[in-house]
Length: 357
Image (tube, rainbow, N blue to C red; front, side, top):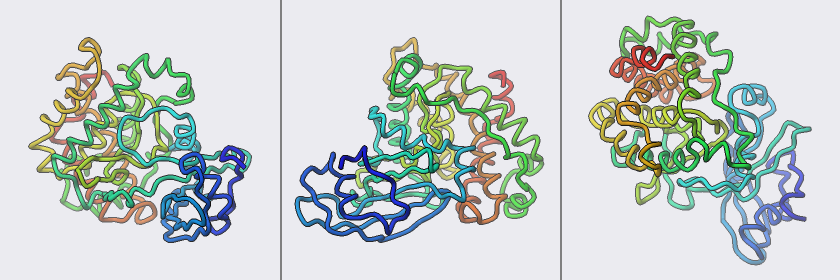
C-alpha cells in the first residue's frame, strides 16, 4: 500500500506498524515499523501526539509528530484557519525556503472532515520549541525575519499567482466572531500592565475599526505567500540559532507585513523590540531575494509594519478574553502586553490612516 492509498485511522492507538511503514516509505525506503506507541498527547484545537517507533528492518525516526482534526473544534478551525490548508500545502510539494518540520505523509478525508499529518519530530533535531514566556534574543529574531523574507520573496507577486500548485491559497480576510469576545475578562487580567489607550478600546473599536480595517488592507499591496500565524508559539530554535516555523494551518496570501509584524512584535521583549526593530526590519528587507524595483522601500516597510500591530493585539486580546480555553493565561498575558505596547509605541491608528485602511 502506498502512502496515497492510506485511510486515516480513527485514533492514535489505531495506527498499526504496517500503516506507519507505508506512511514513512517515501522518506525511509526499506524501513519496516515494528511498533507504534503514543509517547505524548497534546490536544488543543487539533489532536496532536508524539509517537515512538521501533523497527524490525531498516531505519527511520525514533519518534514522529502526528496532527489530526479534533471533531469538537472542526467548525472553529474551518472558520478561522482553513481545515485542510496545512496538509494541502505539504501535499503540493512546493518549496518552503525556511526551516520547518519535514512532512512524511499528509492525508485529507473531506467526507469525514478529517486530515492526518505524520511529520518530523523536530525535538529530535535539537529544536527548542518556544512560547511567549521564553522570548527570543535579538539575534534569534533576526534569523526568524531572514527566514520569513526568503519565504515571502519566493512567492512575491506574480511568483505566487503563477504557481499552479498554490492556486487554492486564499487571501487573508477578516473572519467573524472576534467582536463578541468578552474583553472585560482581558482588561481585568491585564490591569495596569498595558497602556490605558488599549484598555479604552471596546470590541467594535478593536475588532472592527482596527483589526478588520488592517486585514482589509492586506491585498492592497503586492501579495505574497504568508505563513499566516508565525507567532513565537509556532516556532522553534535550533542549536545554531536557526529559527523554524511550525503549524502552517493559516497559510494565506497577502501583505508581507502580517508575517513580519506578528512574528517580531511577539517574539521579543518590549525592550528588545523597541531597541532593535528598525535594524531587524532592515535585516528583513536586505534578505528579500527581489529585484530592487520590487522590493518595498524602507519607509513603506516601516509604515506597513506599524499597521500590522492591529493583528497581534486583536488576536491575543480575544484569546486572553477566553480564559484558559485556548492558551495558558501567562502565555496570553505576555502576548497581549507586547502587542499593546507596540500599538501605542508605533501609533498603529495613524499608520492605518496613512495606508488608507
